[in-house]
Amino acid sequence: MAREVGRVEITMEALFARLAADFGDGLGELRVQEPDTLVAAVERRALHALAERLKAHELGYETLNFIAAVDHVRHLEAVYHLYSWHTNTWLELHVEVPRGTAELDTVTDVWPGADWHEREAWDMMGIRFKGHPDLRRILLKDDFIGHPLRKDYVDRAENHPHV
Amino acid sequence: MGIGDDVIRMVPDRLKVQYPKLSDFSQPNVITTTADLVFAWARSRSVFPFTYGLACCAIEMLSSGFAKFDVARYGMEVFRPTPRQCDLMIVAGTVNEKMAPVLKRLYDQMSEPKWVVSMGACATSGGPFYDGYNVVNGVDKVVPVDVYIPGCPPRPEALFQGLLELQKVIRQYKFVPELPEVPEPAEPAERS
Ligand code: SF4
Image (cartoon, rainbow over all chains, first blue to last red; front, side, top):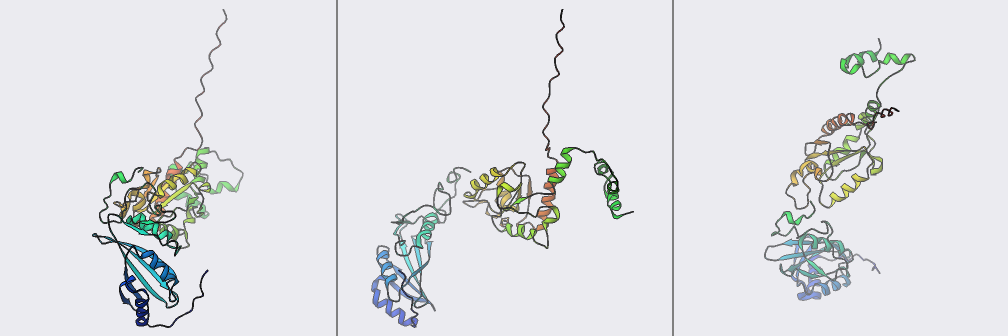
C-alpha cells in the first residue's frame, strides 16, 4: 500500500544530519552535491538492505527514477537516482561494481520500476542483477554478443550473427 | 482556344499520341490505349505510402505531408500504418539490427506490387552510424530498394524528387502478364 505523502519542510543541512544519523556508515561519503541532491557511496553487499530501509524511512525515498551504469575502466559503477516526495530532494547512491564479477542484488522487489532499468544496465554494461525476475536484453536483440557500452567492447563481425 | 489546348501544346510530340486532346471530350469519342498504360498511369498517381519513420528523417517525411509541402499534389498523401493497405514503404531513418527482421516481415506482408524508397543517409548506408554496433548498413541488405534519396535529412523537396523518380519506375512496370506462348496446332496427319 502506498503511504500518504506528507510534505516535510526541512533544510538540506538538517536532512543531511538526519540521514547521517539514521544510516551511519551505510551511506558512505555522504555529501550535498547540488541544492537538492545528496550523494552517497554504498557497499554493494549492503545495497539491498539499505534500499529497503531507505524506502521505509520516515523521510524516505519512495521513487527510483533511474539506474545509470558507468564504466570507470578500473571498475564499473551503478548509480541509483532516488527521489523523496516528502522532502522533494534527490539521493544518488553510487555503487562500485568490480569488472570481473559484475553482480549486484536486484532492487525490483523494493522498487518494481527498477525492472527495465536493470535489464538495460545488463544489456549495455553487463551488470548482472541477482534475483531479477526476467533478466533479458531489452534494447539489443537476444543473440547479440557482448555489452557494447563497456569501454573494452570491440565491435566484430562475429557479434552480428545474422547480418 | 481554352487553357487545355495551351497545356497540350507544352507536351512533347512523341508523347502526344498517347493522350487524347481535351477538346476530344466535348463530343462522343473512343480512346484506344493499352491496359498497361492505363494501370501505370493510375498506379503511379495513387501511391499509398507506409508510415515507416524510424528516426529523425521521419520528421521531414511528416512535414512533406503537411500543407506547406503537401505530398498530396502527387497523389501520395494517404499514409497508412498497416502494411495491408500500402504499396510504398518509405524507410525514413536508421534501421537497427533489432528492427531489421520486423521491417522484413512488414515488407512481406505488403501486397504486390510494392516499392521501397530508402530515405536519407541512414537507410541508404548506415549514414552517421555506419560503425555502430547495432546498425544495419543500408536497408537494401534487408529488402530490395527502388529509389535512394541522399541527405541527412533530405528536405521534403528531395523526397518529392525521389517520389517522382519512383513514379517513373512504376510506369515501367508491366501489370498485364505476358500471355503464355500457345503452340501452333499440329497439322492433322494425312490419311493414306
Ligand atoms: S540520415 Fe540523418 S536525418 Fe536521416 S535518420 Fe539518419 S541521422 Fe537522422
